[in-house]
Amino acid sequence: MISIIVSSYQPTYYKALVDNISLTIGNVVYEVIRIDNPGLMGISEAYNKGAIKAQYPYLCFVHEDVLFHTNNWGINLINHLKGLEIGAIGVAGSAYKSFVPSTWSLFKPYIASNLIQHVKNQDKTSYLNKIQGKEDENMYEVVTLDGVFIATHKTIWEKGPFDEKLLKGFHGYDMDFSLQVAQDHKLYVVFDILLEHFSEGNPNNDWMQAAMTVSDKWKKYLPTHCIPNLLETDRLNLETKAKTGFKKRLKRFGYKKLNRILLYLKYL
Image 1 (spheres, rainbow, N blue to C red):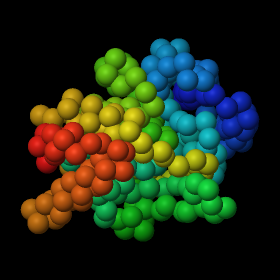
Image 2: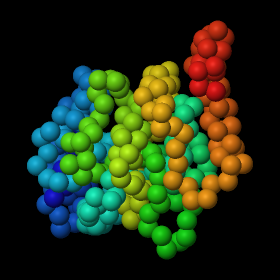
Image 3: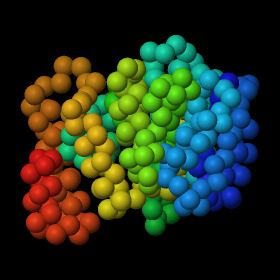
């Protein structure tokens, strides 16, 4: 029932993941599709290649440097995706997305995650549990999902695959795919699938270029959110966060002053 698609370049991580899946997924028919990708192609292309090969109706796109901590998580995945109202689920994401290029994690308190995250260059982990919602809730509606884990229907992917023509690298594919799915379906972060992730994200100039590409593609749709009764003052505060973060990153990534000014005029 589930086709698990992995863009892989680290055999040790991949083997550990495959072994872990067999122990945790539960009584579910599944396959693991490995796309060998030591820098040969972008994530979008790799995931599309894997999805083309998939023989089951549910697709699970996951990084290879993770381990599942939830037993029977495959059953939980299928239960969430029964019917087509829910288009995709993940373990981290945001209920708000600005037009200003940004990360999903910027928009507190309207973010959610269920992830054991290893911290770069430090011998520790951070348990990123749900940010908002009642304790008995097992999902949180969002408009963007983090790419560490995204599960969807094969029919939805067929309607709107990853944009490999526009996003040729290793960033932006998750936000773009989320926004595509959100045109017709709901997205959720779920709290009954727990992952441990062994590497952090790496925002750099490639990430910034991809973030701007996504904003340009969806400029008629952004900003967007799924926050009930969002006050205008709160919305403006979220936009301020996005603008401040954008300015800081442009400086950090070495954009010259004239280029920064032009980008301020475009996005701010």
